[in-house]
Length: 402
Image 1 (cartoon, rainbow, N blue to C red):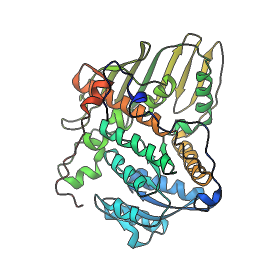
Image 2 (cartoon, one colour):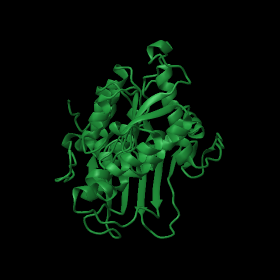
Image 3 (cartoon, helix red, strand yellow):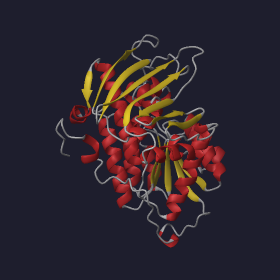
Image 4 (spheres, rainbow, N blue to C red):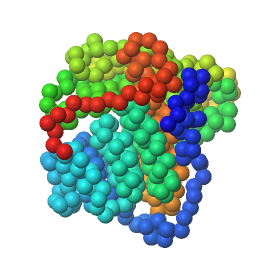
């Protein structure tokens, strides 16, 4: 893959060129899409049966649109818990680091990937190569190579007439969608600057375990598995901000550190200043584990004629020459996932393979990785230089079963 020069606007001309970003659907006859109709149940495999995996499996089941026929996780107790609840045969419960490959050899229509983020790129790519539709948790990756892998997998999915959906809840909400439509039509004018924040009281102050199996159970505290919390969790704010700005960052200057978490764990705070095309700045902060702190996932972008404000936990609206009041958004964590689950089924049965969630997910993930690296280095990093470095994070999982 050709690496762009520092003066080149990066992802859109390089690896995202040709990515599926169309807004119109390509409709096929139902007989060409598994012979399915809008109400038919699709056979699913769940890859990753931990906390979120088991939680979202319940939402898939409750939708009435799917049935689970296989599951995979490193741990036997997890596949058994999910398998018993959803009636999955014992012969189709797979374990180990490569259990997903056995799952993909079986008969099923789609996979839901809810493993630690380090594993997402390879598992998603393997699923596309196996001819399966993909429902993927955020973040899509922990590093640049992983982001590139997902971008390529999304393009292959479109070429193979497969659906590839990334589960960001905000993008599934009708009020967010309408607010962004209004921004695109110019309701806030020329973009001037933005800010985004992610303070969260949770996250804990854990120490990464020494053993491979311990790391796989407490993967959040292992940078190579989670990508650090700026990538694994604070990406929610950055995803909305980059959605509004509709551009790739040029550079970032960052700092942060471990003042609360133990040495060897992930960081507990980042402060990053991004520059976007047109000298548009974005100020970003994220912090965790402060007792009684008010949780926020917010983004605000100012334009020449007004501004847009979004809060994951309450609302999104526009103020200025043009007003948009939006509406209350209760429990977006659940309702957004439910919408994505319904639309995943619709895209498959209706034959919509443009896969519009992939390219923006790659963009926001690269933005988060850029912020992390700027913070780690305590200085400036350009996106072009970061991509040229193409550094892959590798966890030490010696002793883990295959």
